[in-house]
Structures are given as C-alpha cells and as structure tokens.
Image 1 (cartoon, rainbow, N blue to C red):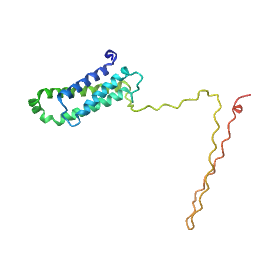
Image 2: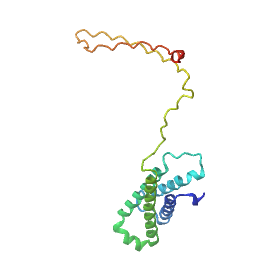
Image 3: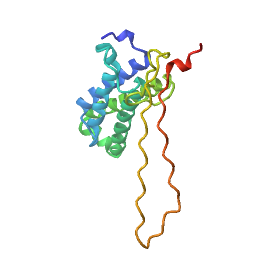
Image 4: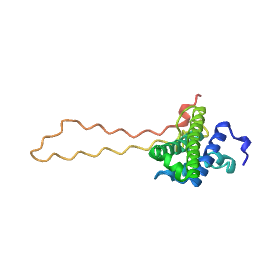
Amino acid sequence: MNFSSLSSNEKLAVYGSIAVIVGAIVGGTVSALGWLALLAALAMLAVVFMPQFSPTTKLPGSKGSLMLVCGGVAAIVVVLGLLSILGLLSYYFQLLPLNAIFFLIAVVGAIVMGWAGWQEFQAEGGKFQLGASTAAPAAPANPQAPSAPAAPSAPAAPSAPAAPGAPASSEPMPPAAPPAAPSDPDDSMPS
C-alpha cells in the first residue's frame, strides 16, 4: 500500500473513511442506518486501494463515480442521523460525552468523504459511469476477406382464411423477400 501515490482527493477520502470507521465504532451508531455509513466507508477504502492491491481487478465503474456513491451514502446517512438527534444532542453530551464527540467526528468524516468523492467525480469529467462498459464490436481481422453469404430469409406464411361472417383484412400482405444471392469475391476486384 503506497499512500504517497494517491491523489489529494483519494487521500482526503481515506482520512474521511478512517474518521467514519473510528467514529462509528467508538461513538456507536445513533441512527438506525448508521451501520450503512460504516459499510460505505469500508467500500470507499476498497475503491481507493483496490488498484494497488490487485492491479488486474477492474472496478465496476469509474473510480470517481464509485467514490461519489460511497461518500454520498455515508454523508447522507450520518447527517440524517445527526438531524434525528439534534434536539437531544445536549443530553447526549451530558450522558456520554466521549461517544458524542466520536459521533461528531464520524459526521465530519462522512462529509469529507462526500466532498472527496465529488471532487474526484468532477476531476474525471463529471460523467456518471457505473456497471460494465459496453464495447463496440470488434472489426474483422482481414477486411479484404470475403464475407459469408447471407442466409436466405424464410418464406412468408400464408394467411389463414377468414372465419365465416368476419370481415376480411383490408391490409395486403407484404411480398416475401427473395433470397439473397451469395456474393462472389472475384466480382468486386478490378481486372
């Protein structure tokens, strides 16, 4: 693990992730979804350090998009947890001051994670890319080689006779396409 090779946004995300992890473990999870912020912080560390641990492993999206998702989830969950106990924060500081301080450290760490994810996302161009990228189909190795003849199309099925008393369809049936003639590679070459 080479910490000096990380960009400033990645370093900021690591600092925020560590603050969320330590704050969530020592401070306890206040909201019902506080564990989600802890998982998002662990996922952020995996996104940042995966290229160093396993260079052949491909992330399921761009690094900036994944950092934005992880940081955004952590920031939203922890800030909503803070808002849910905002009225009780003074009692929380009186009863369990160490837990309250570490919870606030987790809140600040989650906001830092979200900011670092946003900055990395913007540095990549601001295009959200998650999932496997779709590649264009490969071109043939030899464009001069003759292509395989097209398969003949199946003849059209005859239409069923109309039931007695039912009006006949006024749309004519399209004619069946004639089978494609195989291409001769000698015809296309100049003499």
